[in-house]
Structures are given as C-alpha cells and as structure tokens.
Image 1 (cartoon, rainbow, N blue to C red):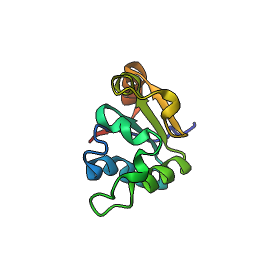
Image 2: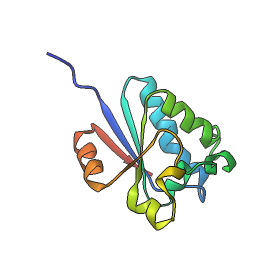
Image 3: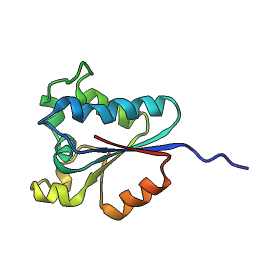
Image 4: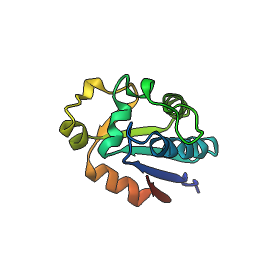
Amino acid sequence: MEETAEKILYISTHGRENPERASVPFVLANAALAMDIQATVVLQGDAVTVAQKGVADDMPAGGGFPPIKKLIQDFLELGGEMWVCVPCIESRNIDEADLIEGAVTTAGGKVNLAAIAANAVFTY
C-alpha cells in the first residue's frame, strides 16, 4: 500500500505592511519541506503583494528571520507551491504577468479542497 504524503497548508494575509507576519508562513513551510512534508502557501489579502515582482526585494527582514525574498526563493527551490488569490490581486490592480516566477493564481474552490486534503492548516 502506498503511503499518503503529509500536507500542510499555510494561509498568509500579511504583506509588506508587516514583514514579520509575512515571513512566518515561509519559515514554517521551508521547515516542512525540509522534513519531506508537502507545503503550500496561499497568499490572500495584502499578502499577495509579496508575490509581485520587485516587492520582496525591498522588504526589510522581520522577526529575526532572513529577508522574505530569500525565504520565498528557498521555498520555491525546495518544491513548495505558492498560490495567489485572483480576486485579491485584481482588487489591488496587480496583473498576473506582474507576479514572480513560481506564483500560481488560484480561487476559493481550490483552496477549500486543499484545506480538506491537508493534515494541518495554519493562518497568519
């Protein structure tokens, strides 16, 4: 019988207005990936701004963590999935073409299904 992979879903609602809270989901998701746990970070509300090209470049490190740009790069290189809320980018006049490589747009249904399938869901 095949083992089912463990999955954690991290929902982030903070962006450049709070670098510490924006960083925590990526810190935890990177730890999960290092433990061979599948990790998905969903960016909603102001958190979608960290997926916009150039924004993470200018964000100060928060909470004693590495800069969020490095956290996001490591997360994507380790195989994490970053989903970005479509209505949230639209309401901020962010075009899908303005998102960093590796950011994938999504809507509520997919997030709900991922939450049901996850072993844990964290919100920041």
